[in-house]
Length: 93
Length: 93
DNA sequence: TTGATATGATCTATATATCGATCATTATGG
DNA sequence: CCATAATGATCGATATATAGATCATATCAA
Image (cartoon, rainbow over all chains, first blue to last red; front, side, top):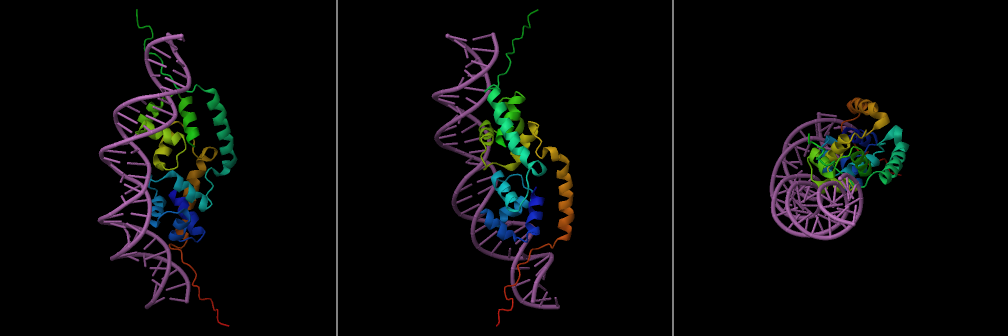
């Protein structure tokens, strides 16, 4: 993922500093993200992805919305809390 | 994204505590992620997505690898540092 | 209905990410 | 080739996320 961000950045001839500024983060942070550090705010990574024109769910761009709608609908149906079955299942015998 | 994680969780009948444990995070953290808080470690979010069987780049699962390879190849070609054009473009006159 | 359990919300202490600066290295444009 | 700008790496101070506990509420199973 970081690799693709970097690709997008260089393709667009953006300096690391430039892109960092646009995203409102430090150059060091951008470095970490491009290196693939998993301990970064997901929001920032997505922001960068957008800034360099990365299509996150690309071929399926539309499906995201579709999936989200389905998700909402399903959530409306599913039980609102997950209940663990009671362990006493008639062990008597 | 958090919404889809939640969907996957309930569909699989996982308790919030259960899933949090499996991911090695606190229940509170899972709550924030399911709520869509952008200030979370991207690694954890992806871990959760995997745990509930979310196909991140779904229809395009294979394309991720493909894209990554292309990214590597392109990066090998592109200039290794981005250079801003010198401003002195013959303003004399 | 009721009793038990999952979820939502909030707080504090602690761990840790982030910034900003700095230095060294590399690579490009001239 | 050389000067300059971009990148890589590191450090201390600070802001902030995270864990863990706790309380309240909602919701399901029996």
